[in-house]
Length: 510
Image (cartoon, rainbow, N blue to C red; front, side):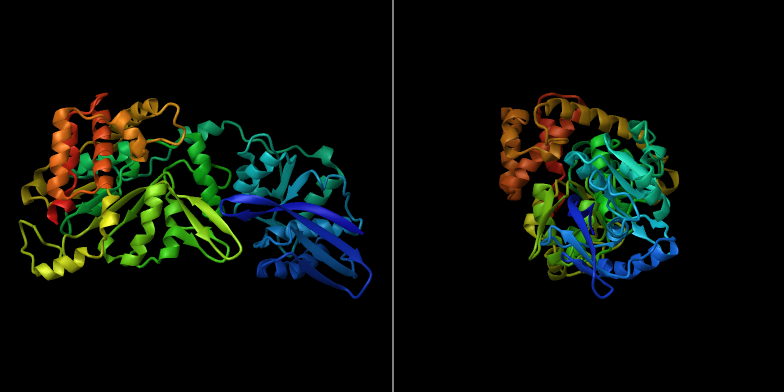
């Protein structure tokens, strides 16, 4: 007998429909799996055999051939355990095959017949809905996650026996419903570090607000203990909440990576990723035999924080150049090429020299000019060109530490950030790919960043004096546009451009 069950496999952050064909025929007992399965799928032969017996079903002692289609697509993971089990039961006439063509089956099976959750359910559900699949049958722990997708019937089962009972008596079961999806976003998490913990540092706080309002990349340069890391970790608290479409996109990425802590709820907070400086290039941009998203994709729509930037290997940092410009990264392998989204705000911090005290008013630097030159050589010019805000952070004076009052709270700053972003979104009507000023393309500058004579003369003088590239000058204009939005101005003025130029600290140091 022959049975066909539908399942799916993850490719990048998307899914591909996979057919699981099971043939039970005469011959020596055994199971053969075809269609480029990985080790986890090959091991499912023994898991499924023990599961069927322990769940009270008869395992056919005949030759079983399982073919995963399309045959040229590599498949991985334990999510094929359930469709293989159902296929064997249908081919041996132990379960009705009437509904097999209408549903996708996903799930890992335990030896006692219970179903274990898997990663990547949300993108599979989204793909199934686009293909017109009636619904999904999967572990109960994944049901809420899949139910986020509208127009799809989702049936969560605790064990294999429930799956069989559903196929034999579908009228007894109702699909899971998940209402008030938007409400999940309105209850944004409040577990973020607050800016009111930061004393002083008005210049750095202003740069942080501009970065949040415009999505601009930012680097803090200063001696140890000046508050660089403390400031950077408070950026998520002043960013506007994720919109529903953005939350769904971020949740898909985290689902594929297996990082969803609360299955059935969307990621509500903007991601904040902080990899160690020993991280490799593939861990940042993604990779592997079966490509998986890296840190820059996990930070999509959020923040990627690189603490001690100059301690990262130079070749690793160069991996960031193309994603910072394009907003996505393409991972190519021999058999496939996948694209991961990577629209993130880069925030970095570093000391000004190896000893950390160059330019400090309290402790003298012990580094030679040659040592400082080698230290900054770890950061290439093209990479620094892509960092819009370069801010020097000085240590607080003793009286500032002991007497300075607490700073402004993150919620108040977020209100101004939200207002600035709303102005930008109103301006971007008709441009579906633009969500913040940092994403403005060169062709938009003449339209939205027009300069008067005073502003133009100021920018030209800065380009000559600092030796700025065309990319760096464009980014100054984008920062100036954000400063104008925070001020509520529709037109760029000389003071907006002047403030934007002041944030090219490293350019002035070199």
